[in-house]
Image (cartoon, rainbow, N blue to C red; front, side, top):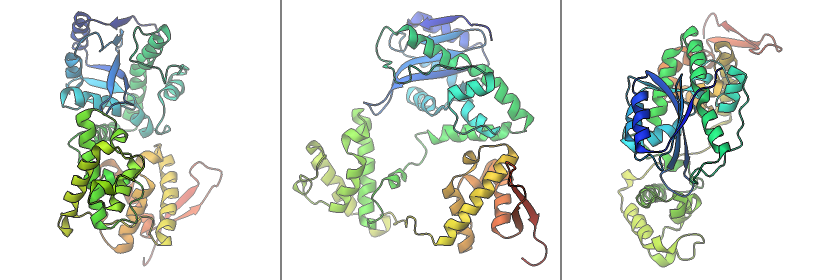
Length: 395
């Protein structure tokens, strides 16, 4: 693999020339380095770009606004190649209000051709190209200038192999007739990072909600939304506003006055008034507007048992299809399928009910779940050890 010319872009003039060159290309790869520990929005510190002929490091701290670059990324006529690109999608949206127009994510593509998912950039480069990459600058401080020689080498190497990886994975997707599957996954990635995606249920992932009634769950939901807004407005991490564990604790105490919260250790006093106002507003909601309680881990034993059987079937099927099983569905997706069959209701929207999964995976799982297909261990030494037989006669 030949060495490519490398350029560090540090001025607005150099950025304009770089973007003019990129605008002539149908595709390029890019990566970003950012710092997000101390802020709500990540601070972009470096953009690395790869083409077939040249490599660039764009310094946003000195080259000025990167509008011209991000406008190239959102253009659907141009493929933007990334690896594990959630951060890149978010940064693109923060900069332009739009998602990448034609994203290709190497990590997702690797999972769709049977490689480990999620696979790191270094292991992917090694497995497909036989090259070892150094990860010595993983925890580096990217805000400091000037960049060190090792930082610069690491940054160039992070994008040096993006296009060769893209070519290999694209060819494998085409040979498996899975280019459409990949596009579906790329679009889902872009949507999942979109501000427009409904995120009102993210608060349910907090711990300690199992014992709360509907009224107190409404308080948690309201506090979560208030915390997100406060963190974004002040550009501080959410944990600097109120820690996760304290949201459920506040709801449990159900405070009516500031002094009701003064004894809670770790709760910033500066926000006590705002917190009580949020709690009081949630307390005034009509009962029907309060979120429903969700029984966690209250499934009868057979749901877990059958879900485990489906998990084994999915693993066997994934090997036969040549796809990473944890990219296909989660254990919760499988349990949702079992619950629906047990209750005789339609399966709620989940990964398995749409796109390529619904066409190629769900029917196989449903056939086993409904007793229409029997399985047995046919060859315990084989990677895919099960054999399947359609059940004849009455079901």
